[in-house]
Image 1 (tube, one colour):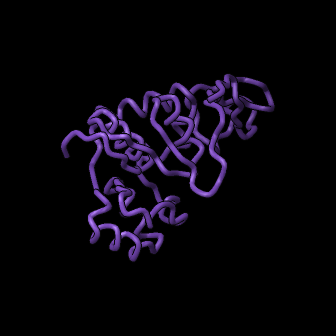
Image 2 (cartoon, one colour; image 1 turned 180 degrees about the vertical axis):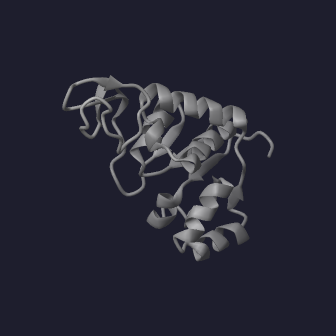
Image 3 (tube, helix red, strand yellow; image 1 turned 120 degrees about the vertical axis):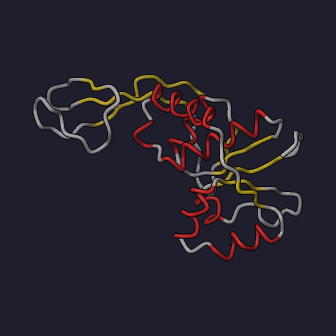
Length: 175
């Protein structure tokens, strides 16, 4: 892919389900191989095939460098446990395309993706829902004994008192 100032939408499954912007003749889309597989599992084959046949959809593997940048940003915000590997790749692809000179915009309803995109200055649009209005940094804590835990995953139990761990916003920055 060469450098260009053209707009390209980086899509996840919610963008296909929401059918946003497919009628626009000039719209271009990109996604990753892992998200393409997820879309196929959700029975979106007809939409995918139409976009591929029309040349509007590109399937691109993101660079490991951009994936590492996304993972670091997600960890710093406390969102890593809520970001799947395909989500990481989606954001990394948007980062790669932006570095190549594209006006990349992520289309997603996922708030964790939107939060991380904002922190990395990646443009995003929500599909059929309100998007985030703040970048949020999260902390995991135990509501039973009030201990805080860095880098815990959702659904874990406090090793000290056995209470299910929760997370709370510790820093919010208005967009």
